[in-house]
Length: 100
Image (cartoon, rainbow, N blue to C red; front, side, top):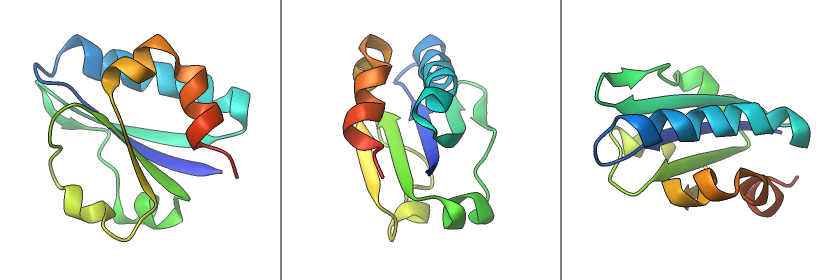
């Protein structure tokens, strides 16, 4: 399964990057290929391309705020998850939301 994700938090510092790291580290355990875009204090990093999005089976929006450029995902199977859910139990996120 291929997933693209966007992480963002209100301050755009620690939690944005902690959630991206947690998703990236856990994905191989569930046979998931993932690319994570962060929208933090430094702006958009590791930006998802239109090709990345087109190839994805699902989109995870891991944020408690509105993300930039959300319209890119309008036609995609998109799941919104709070930052806290990922940080507290990333395995549950994959088990519940990232099954084939």
